[in-house]
Image (tube, rainbow, N blue to C red):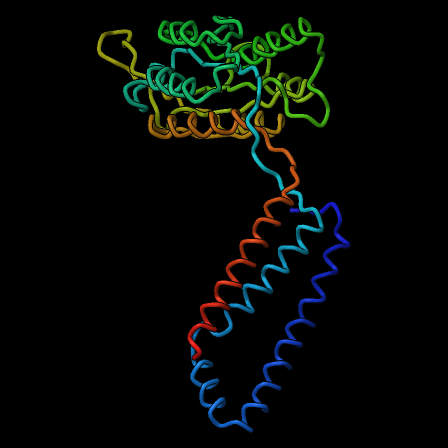
Length: 324
């Protein structure tokens, strides 16, 4: 939290003086009570109450809140985005048939992506890019969630892992949309208008390095959230050359995905299970649906000060009513 008028906080220095004044007043009342034994006994009885300092404490807290409000406090708060474009970039290489994520990596990815769509505001445009040995845009950014779901359901796994090509395809879509809208890049100092979600279960094996495209995404102001799907010990069952089955290790590549997210000022997630993957997509839906802005919260401080003042008055009245 910061303050637009920090010098106003110097008013807090008056609080210790007020406390000293209250203590001095209490001592004077104690000396006066010695002259009148009946009052002394009454004051002693009231003074044993565990709430005897509550009114003064509430009053002091109220003053602290008022001084804080006068300093015009600023806080970073989540604000719903009005519009944004989200590109789902999904790995459909052959390793997505691995069963270490139940029922398969690809089936878990389809289900989690569908849940993610439910969490996005209706005005958000969503596009779908799939990549294996090459990359294709299956759905241009649209608010038609049905079209995206239908394309997700049709995904099949086969081929290599062209992660860099998938990210390049997604950024091409973003650039085309911005050019159509007269924007070349995100406005400096504002939340980006486009976000990419890159899910992959293996290392890049075809095409250019995804780190090159990560640098391009950074220049365009497009954060790329990345998800490493699968377990380090994941294997892909395939038919053997002489019958039977053979198993090919298909571990994910968390290092590369983490670097992509770091380069683009986004976040990296690991999803070794379908439950983890659902939690990741739920988390991302909440993050992408909001942006963080700095807002003045003086009203909250003022309201708190008034509430504390009312409570202090109520506590004082209740304490006084116990005396005959």
